[in-house]
Length: 219
Ligand SMILES: CCCCCCCC/C=C\CCCCCCCC(=O)SCCNC(=O)CCNC(=O)[C@H](O)C(C)(C)COP(=O)(O)OP(=O)(O)OC[C@H]1O[C@@H](n2cnc3c(N)ncnc32)[C@H](O)[C@@H]1OP(=O)(O)O
Image 1 (cartoon, rainbow, N blue to C red):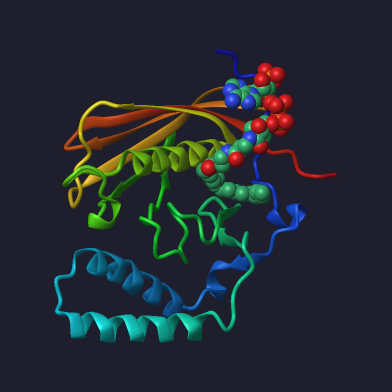
Image 2: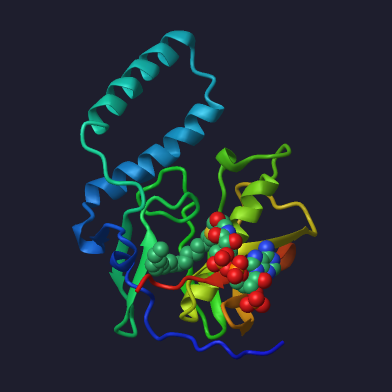
């Protein structure tokens, strides 16, 4: 596979795409705490066997809270900006459903750059269940999509997924330590070829390949 695309050293500035940008240090610690607590709340709701009066009280409290938080909402598409260790700037979608720091539905997947791509260790609670005790296959695809896209971005080539191919090799367990890895394997013109896998105890449970098509900033 040929590698003839020229990686750019900096990620494109989302402002050039008309997107609002929030600096990481502008994100209140109280929001991060709220996100973590609501993440746990979703799992609690999914599995609770509390009695009906407790359920009714919880339902009213959550409804009231939703109305209070909805008074002031961020624009869809807001991007989080943070400094990178190498002096560059990193961007990610604030509410990304897999890794967004303000999204309680997110895993959250915190991908670290490695020598050849990206990597993360994470655990999925019962919220992500498909078959009994196992992670939903659609979420496995979403996790791989995110890691594959991030590997491309980490190599300076931000793109959209044009094609994603997933093989489910072994069941992926809930509530157990998982590892995800991804890397760029080649690039030609705007196409970036990426591959990655999810492992449990060192054994591959799912692997994916994708073609990301690099974004071109409007001129
Ligand atoms: C915005 C600001 C950014 C700021 C910085 C951000 C930092 C972010 C940080 C971290 C990264 C995050 C990571 C995200 C991870 C999650 C990713 C997703 O979930 S993406 C959502 C799902 N994907 C879509 O919604 C795409 C929908 N499809 C499209 O929009 C178009 O089809 C698109 C862009 C993929 C291509 O359209 P065309 O018109 O631009 O380009 P054409 O000319 O058609 O294709 C270019 C090349 O790609 C090939 N191609 C296109 N589609 C293909 C396909 N399905 N299979 C194989 N090849 C394909 C073509 O054959 C062509 O190749 P040839 O250069 O001629 O060899």
